[in-house]
Length: 314
Image (cartoon, rainbow, N blue to C red; front, side, top):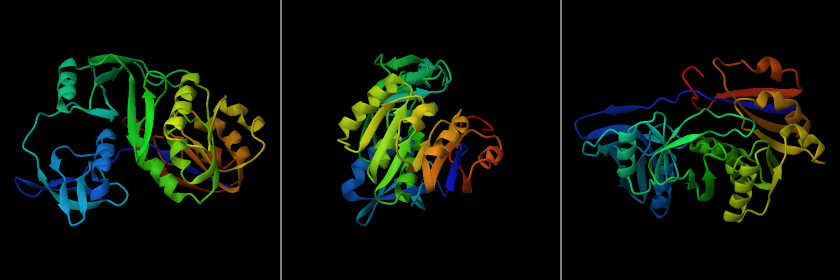
């Protein structure tokens, strides 16, 4: 049978304990000096770097303060930066800051907070439609929804109005990549612009990356070329049609469609080899909500984990 792994989205706790007026205990990630600048930019773009604390050298490494526990992170002491303006809550994707509320004054502060930000947006809709897109209002900066995003040495061209993208799954992508055996055959059923597919291609013999959204597939092909990835096949298709397209089964299937992956599970199971793994992401209010449906299939076991929060209670 196959193994199905559910990623349910839930809240991560930020741990920060002030020891005195200048030193703070916070999660830190250790990076070699040669990779320091590249890793700093990645953490910054992913919204993980804590800007209120100063990175510090430790022998041949640099310790970066991060907002939450990450794989390999440890609790460390950091010096606090002098008090700065509290910036509005936002998600940073490349050079675009996405605010949850339309606050033009806060957007102007965000735009001026670091030179890498060129645009500040606020969503005017939830993720909607078959193509999973959102509409945005431009609050400050350049009138664009296009940006280039860096993640663990990979580059992605992203248009937020054309295809959904979240930088918050960076750690999840690396977790799956690190669990792969060499030479796996991988299927990404809802590939978007390719963050899972191109990341996992580093350890796979072949990756089939499919999406229903023509704009997403256009950007996926662009990102395959941008990263010189030679083992990813981009496919424009409805996920329910994939069993009729592929003549083989896959070692690993990724289903990153939290609002509707469960209804495509029969197709995923039919394309996953015996002993393979399916990563299915679902929105849940409580653990175990999907188990009754999953157990209808010949799976050998289910591992359920919390990844991140989507909204209060989900």
